[in-house]
Amino acid sequence: MDSPTFLDNFYPIFKQHWLTITLGALGLIFLVYGLIVLLGSSSSSKDVIFESGNEAVLSSESSSKSLDRQIIVDVEGAVLKPGVHNVPTDSRIQDALIAAGGFSLDADREWVTKNLNLAIKVTDGTKIYIPKIGETETGSINGIKSIKGGNAEDQVNINTASQQELDSLPGIGPIYAEKIINGRPYGAIDELLSKKIVGSKVFEEIREKITVY
Image 1 (cartoon, rainbow, N blue to C red):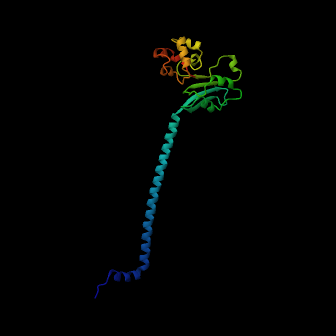
Image 2 (image 1 turned 120 degrees about the horizontal axis):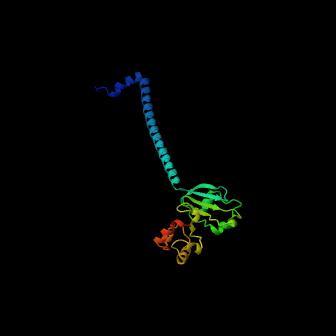
Image 3 (image 1 turned 135 degrees about the vertical axis):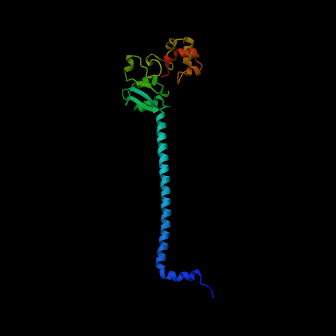
């Protein structure tokens, strides 16, 4: 006679306690499923928090770099928003004027056209003055000044000065003055050296007395 198998022994027990066994099995299945869902949700949440943190850091770093690339210019006179403005490092005079709201109705546009090179780059601390109509008739106006080095009021603009004005600089005679005029335009006073217009000794004598704005 064959010995009873596991199923032969289990069936009477299952038949007697089928409801308890079934509920227990279902409870175990739901418990395992619940743990899987919970662990998956926790991992996803951590990923989202980590990504958001990275975005915040990147955003902060981007804003900081953007601020580092700003310079300050002072735009006064016949503009809509006169005063101090922040502009990007590589800005031109035109960009500074846009930051100041553009010309006012009484701006002397003819003077601007004749005297200002709107394509010249501005540097930190540059002052730009736009005269009103009729204002230029009362005296000479230098529209662009840089506060770096020397007294801006006494500096000679090597981009616009006459040969006589250049000749008045120490160490600059008629020959150097003519070379400076022929080498225009200049984006920075150091270009007198890079373009080999003057030597280093003469440059050191005049560097505090000249400007390109």
